[in-house]
Amino acid sequence: MSKIGLIAGAGELPVEFSKNAVAEGKDLQVYGIKGITDKKIQQIAPTVWFNLGEAEKLINRMKQDGIKQVVMLGKIEHFHVIRSIHRFDKRARRFFSQLKDKRAKSILEAVLKELETEGFKPIDPTPYLKSLLAPEGLIAGREPAENLMEDGRFGLGIAKEVAELDIGQTVVVKDGTVVAVEGMEGTDRCILRGGELAGEGSVVCKVARKNQDMRYDVPVIGTKTLKSMKKAKAKLLVVEAGKTFLLERPEVEKLADRYGISIIGIKLS
Image (cartoon, rainbow, N blue to C red; front, side):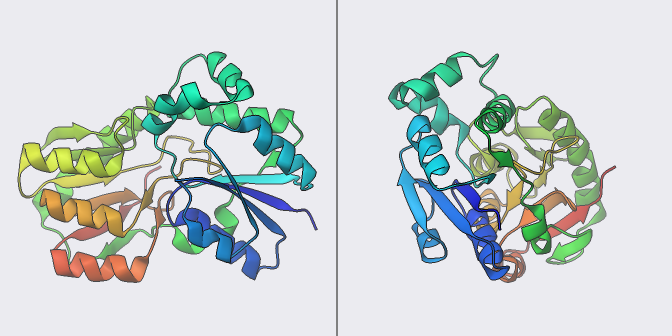
């Protein structure tokens, strides 16, 4: 049986993958990032810890562990990477200096190619996470008013174009107007900024890129998203069905009811 190496970022997604992979009897080795990866992952599978940017050390350890297949899951904030480059090892700095640009997609695609060059095979984690993909239709909360749905459909189209430019995967809209676009700050800060500008009743729209590579950077929503929306007084969250991971669903459903927020999954071609 081929050994799987999980390079784990922040959040629940790496934890859920680990639980499911171990439950299916897979031989899993986790490579956590200090200060970023949730420490509870080490209770699920053997975990080795590295500092962000210790590329040479990580690759050597993966080879030593006999890793053939590799998965990258979990958020590593774009700004965190950019601000930490000066602390990276020689190999990581050389890698970044050769990039054509420093967009998130460019970085992640280059990392995958670098791993392939070293003999590792990046694999799609979706088969282990299918139960987490957001379904089509009403996911939580009440059926939203039609004016909110109009904003949601409008916002999804805008978000799709923004995602293709690799600026971000989230937009906040209200009354047919784009209020905030996700940049380097991440989804939650984008939502809060949208709330500051639009006031009550905004709509948050989150999508995958066109031709999304499911091996990396798949959009994720969870309780943190709902808590940010409550602070922003947003009323509707629209996500791309089948291309967005929904974490902590029972808790999300409870919070949606408590906060008066609706969540809708819409299938896009």
